[in-house]
Image 1 (cartoon, rainbow, N blue to C red):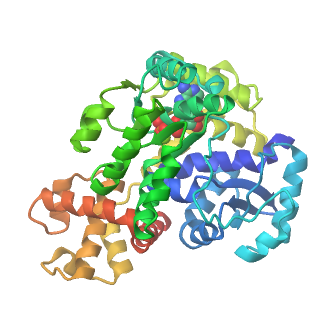
Image 2: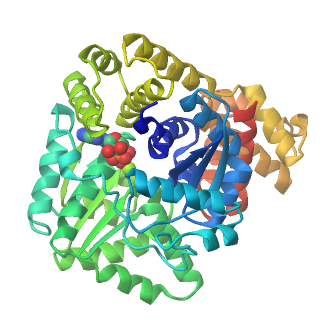
Image 3: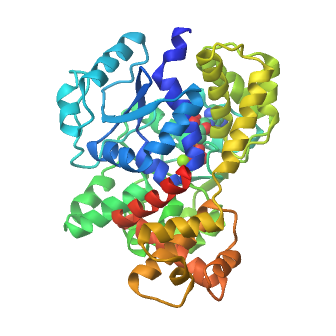
Length: 470
Ligand code: ADP
Ligand code: MG
C-alpha cells in the first residue's frame, strides 16, 4: 500500500462525504464540522473532535453510522473511537501523523485523560467563549474552479474582496446546498485577513445561539460591541434566521451600524433572495440594496474542471476515462462530486486496485445504493419514534394531545418530512391527522425548538441513529 493510502485525513474525508448524505445538515454541522481523521491502528480508526462533549455525543449517538461510513471507505470491519484533539496547524505530513497516532494511542477516550495525553502541539479545548473566526484554509480563491454556473458569483466575490465596503454592500450569495457559497464567502475573508482586516465569520445559527445566550446572561452590550467592531462581517446561511424574530432584530441593528460605516457584509442563503422576504421587511429591504448573485449546479465542463483540480490537489493521476465517468453524472452538489472522487482514490489505494473505469463504476453504484438506503419507510420512522418516546403507535396516530404524545408526534412528522420522500399530506394521513397544515406546523415547531433545546436535538439524533442501524 502506498503511504498516501494510510493518510487518516483522506479516509476521514471520504467518510465525511458519505456521512454528509446521511445526517441532516444541522446535525452534520454540529457534530462533524471540525472533526479530523487522526489515526488508523489495527482496525481502530481514531477521530479527533473539538471538545469532550462532542466526542461523547458522537460516541453515544453516532458511532454506528460513523463506523459504517468508515468501513465503507476502508472495505473492512473497523471500530471508531472519538477523542478530543485540537492543534495549532494542519499537519499533513507523515511526521505529524505519527505524532498524532502516538497521542491517540496514549489517550483512553475519556475527555480529561485525552487532554492530559496530548502533546505540546495540541491544546485541550474547553471553548469557554465564542471561538475565533475559523476560516477553512482550503476555501480560497485559487482553489475555487470557475465555470458558467458560478462565474457571476465569483466575479462579485472578487470585486468585493478587492474593494471591501465599496463594491457591493451587502453581497448576497445564494444557491442550493453544496455549490460553493461558503467557499466563496471565506475566500473573500481570507483575502481580507491577509490585508489585516478584522474579519468575523459566523453562521446565522451560531449568531443566534450567541445572541440568545447574551440575552440570558444580560451581556447584549458586549455582544453588540463584538460585532460592531468588525472590519468585515461574513454571515453564513442566513435562512436560519427565518422565524426567529428576536434574533433578526439583533442582526438588523448589527447590520445597520456596520453598513453605515461602510463595513463589508457578505451573506449567504440557500433560498433565493425573494423567499427571504419572510425575514422582517426591514432586513429584506436592506439586503436588496446590495448585490445578490446565485450559483447554479455545475455544468459538465465545470464538473470536469473541478475533478481535474481536485485530483491534482490529491496529487494522484486519474485517467480521463475515469474523470469523464465521474463527471458525466448529474450531481446536485459539489460535495457529492468531490466525495465520489475521494472514494475512488481511497478505494484504489486501500484495496490496491487500479484506479480504472471498473472501480469508478462500482463506486458510483455503491454510492447510489447508500443514498437509496438512507430513506426510511413510514413504518420504520413511526416505530422508531414510538420506541424512543415510549408512546405506542396507536396513541401517536390517535387524538391524545398531552405534552409527551404531541412532542413524539411532531418529531415523527419532522423526521418523515426530512428523511423520507413523503409529502405533508401523506404524513398527515400516516399519523391520523386531518390535513397537511398540522404537519407543516409540527415540522416548523421542531425545527425551531431543536435550535434551543439540546434534549430534543439528542432525541432526534437518537431516533435517526436507530433508523440508520435498522
Ligand atoms: P455551500 O456553502 O453552498 O453549501 P460549500 O461552499 O460548502 O457549499 O461547498 C461544498 C464543497 O464543494 C466544498 O468542499 C467546496 O470547497 C467545494 N466547492 C464548491 N464549489 C467549488 C468550486 N467552484 N471549485 C472547487 N470546489 C468547490
Ligand atoms: Mg455553506
